[in-house]
Length: 315
Image 1: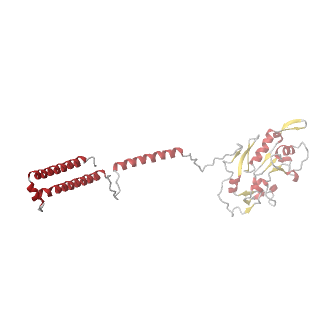
Image 2 (image 1 turned 180 degrees about the vertical axis):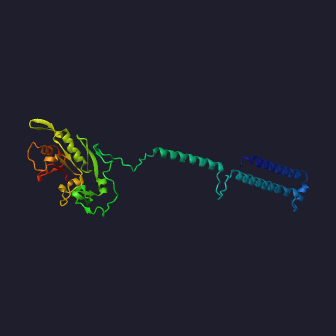
Image 3 (image 1 turned 45 degrees about the horizontal axis):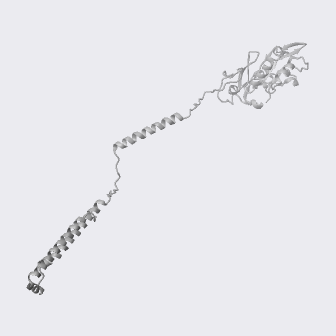
């Protein structure tokens, strides 16, 4: 700032110097030419206007210069003062266009995210109420019910209850003539199935939990051979007659005896005509069938109580 206004200070200084110089020159010339004036000038007189005007002019110049310096300094301060932005409490509104753009971008992002979720979502297996399990052995078929009846037991119609026969359960029944019985139809539907005996093409009805044992026994019979009287024969050739598996009746058809295992569909009679007795001959066909087929398949034999035709499951 001092450099900027140095010319002004220099001009004032030169002006003061010139004023002083000329004023002193005038006083000196008056003393040399007019000694009387010197004496008279020594007399106390009032200050002349010119003598008073010199310092007054200088003071005014200095005051004016000081005022100009302050004015310039004030302007400098205004110029150099940093611009201050006033804060307001009102929220800045966003442009409607920006909102539309932001919403559009947000919608695109959500759409892409939804597509990613759909792609990464694992497949869902739909369960149906239709049964998919089928009998493993093609010889077993339960697609055709043995008997159709009511969905619940009619106790008034089937008042009697059998004993529990192991895993094969029990059922309600009613007495018929000649040692026969009628089993609750609903139990029949739930437990009796139809199978084909291997090697015979004969369809029989058995308890569903005994089906595998029957099929196993007849597989042994169908594939097995034996030496009888020095001659090799098939086991299947030893069977002359095959009588009932599922037959609802009393033992020996006698109403005063208990229910036969045939009533549960767990027994079969082989070669009944001449085997309602005890056998001990090694060449007897029913003994051979017991040893070669029914015993390995889990059956018991009725030979111990003089019923060598009878093979049954006890579980």
